[in-house]
Length: 196
Image 1 (spheres, helix red, strand yellow):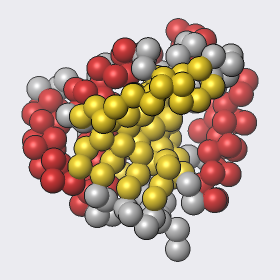
Image 2 (cartoon, rainbow, N blue to C red):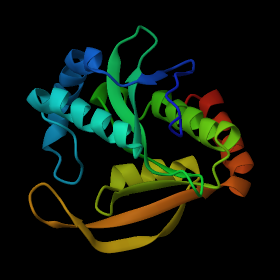
Image 3 (cartoon, rainbow, N blue to C red):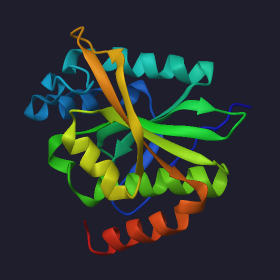
């Protein structure tokens, strides 16, 4: 059995379900909103590439290196994707990444709740020792969101990888450690209670 196994995680603002091609139409619409896919510092598929991106993620799932989710609103509409990735079965570590949401749900409680559900599952069900987050050093919005969760900056991997346009990406690496989870959890619960 692969680790972590596929699962559905449900909250008030969002549900995380195993990603499938059934979500392609909603996700094509989502990434077209505000031309999200044109942002140079992140990797969001163009509307006509969503099915290919879903297939890419599902192929990585088959190899055991990724567990992809579609992010659904309470009415069942897919508004984004997120994953457990860079899965380290031996040492019980995962990265939460390759996340994007349609513009209209960004900076709402939906993201906070999704991260709360993924972190809870990682630490309390999967017994992870650490959960990582990585983003382009220049993606200030993403870095602010990660820091707001309570993750700490581990460092910056300079010239870490090439982006789609061939430029070099510096990657900011953050993490939450198992012993930090209770305080991070309290902070996330406070933000959700305040609807932030």
